Structure formats: structure tokens, C-alpha cells
Image 1 (cartoon, rainbow, N blue to C red):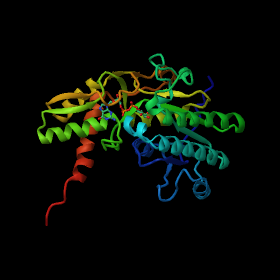
Image 2 (cartoon, rainbow, N blue to C red):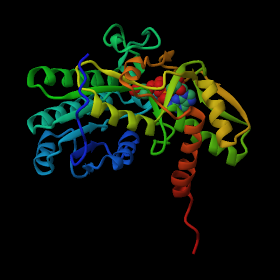
Image 3 (cartoon, rainbow, N blue to C red):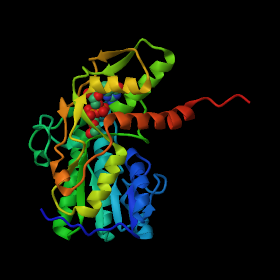
Image 4 (cartoon, protein in one colour):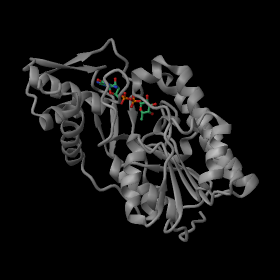
Length: 324
Ligand code: GFB
């Protein structure tokens, strides 16, 4: 594998597409240490699904490096119930940003994918070679297809135009800046919001979707941001790269750990009318380890940090204003 160790972000104009999201906001935090100029485009300024808006913005701002963290994302229910949005928005974002980056001579681009691009029953831990080797998980196949298109766009532009575009596949993420809305969020923020609410109401139990048996791997988003900057600097090749912790646990155990962190002592109730999704999804992260990077934050510590952020930012904002 050919790796370049020469790319530097120092003094570069670096565009974080999706800077308000979970990943994008962590990247903005991490990039403060890189001595670069961070560019961002609000949704009101540029709709990334509209090529002409993007074209104008690129001409004005001239980014030299791009992290593509903009996407329509959500948990199992959002993916399953809004398939058109998940496939259309993500396809358009990927195609428009890659094409515009090539046309405007962007030096380096990092496209974010997802572990759900791999077949539902891929051998575990999932290696990068499992891509397109079997049928996808039905609940998120729409999102997965768009993310696979994102990978293929980067590979095609690398081959035809020599663009230095790479793709990175993160595992399930969590951390400060996550979406805590119960109907659209991923499992971790949903459980945290439910446990917090159940604690305040002194409820006897908390509802967990599905059987609690599916296995998932969770990575703290600030670790991810650090790994992405590492790859931006040290990786330059066509094959995709997984990023994760390599450690998974059953959803039931995650729920118990979240309850402990939040301080909710009731029972867990499993609603088996809700889907489980993929039975297991743990990344093989050996390629990234060989390159010289690994995740740092243990799950328990990451959950504690996230809960502090949740109380500070979400609970406080929801509190009704004091009557004057
Ligand atoms: O995080 P999650 O929504 O997405 O759900 P996926 C993970 C597991 O947690 C599933 C269970 O088995 C859910 O049934 N779960 C238990 C819950 N309680 C809850 C709850 O209150 N809320 C939610 N949301 N889940 C997503 C994909 O799959 O993974 C995305 O749909 C993306 O496209 C993301 O790839 C990384 O891990 O199943």
C-alpha cells in the first residue's frame, strides 16, 4: 500500500462540510490545533444538494482541503421510515462535493462513510475487503447505497483525475453534539435521554427497542476527529479505511451502562416490536493500527463526558425560562 506522510493542514483553508453535526463539530474542535483556517458553510448559505450554490461558494472561498462530514443521518427508525431522504440527500451531497472539489483543484478530500456499507452478515470483525460482498441490512440500505456511491466517487476521481480523495468508514459514533431526539437519534443518545427523563420522573422502568441482543461498537467522536486528521495527513490511497475501537457489546449492556452513568436505577423493558437491525457490527481496525493510530477513550469515560455535555447543553436549554 502506498502511503503519503507529507500532507500538512498548516496554513491551509480547510472546509469542514457539516460543521454543525456530531462529526463536523468534533472536527472543528480538533482542527484548532492544526494551525489552519477553518471554513464552514451554513445550510442557509449553501444547500449542498444544489450544485450551482456549491459552485459559487467554492469559487469564493477556495478550500484547499475538505472533510465531508455533511450527511442526512439518523438511527434505525429514521433510516427505515425516510428512505427517499436518506438516499437522495446523501447521493447529491457526495456527488456535488466531490465534483466541485475536483473542479476547483482541492488538494485533499476525506469522505466520511459508515459501517453500514458492509453486508448485513459480513464476517466479524468486518474488514475493508467485505465491501460489496453480500446483501445489505434492509433498515439502512438506502443510506448505505449513497455512502457506497461516495466511496466509488472518490476512487473514480482518483483514477481519472488523479484527485487525492480518500474514504474512511467510522463505526457507530457518540459524544457531545449528538442528536438526542428520540425518533431520529441513534441508540446511545436515545437511551441517555430516556434514562435522564426516567430518573427525574422516578419511573420504574425504561424502554429499550428490540431484543437488546444486537452487538454494536461505539466510538467517542473526539477520538474519531483525531483519527480523521491523522488519515488526512498520513493516508493517500484508493482502498477505504475502517475507523473504530474494535470492541463491541450487546445493546442491553450498553443500556445498563448508560443507566449507571445517568443514575437511573429502574428496570429495562425490551420492546421487541421494534427492529434489531444488523445482528453484529464490529470493525476490523487492523489497517488503521498498522498506519499508527488507535482510539483512546474507554466507553464508560466517553459516556460520562457525553452525559455532562447533555445536562449542560440540552437539559439546560429545554428548561422553561424563569417567570419574571
Ligand atoms: O443506533 P441505532 O439506531 O442504529 O440502533 P443501527 C442500534 C440498536 O439499538 C438497534 C437498538 O438494535 C436498535 O433497535 N435500540 C434500543 C435503539 N433502544 C433504542 C432507542 O431508543 N433508539 C434507537 N435508535 N435504537 C444505524 C444506521 O444502524 O447505524 C445508520 O441505521 C448508521 O444508517 C448508523 O449507519 C451508524 O446501528 O442499527
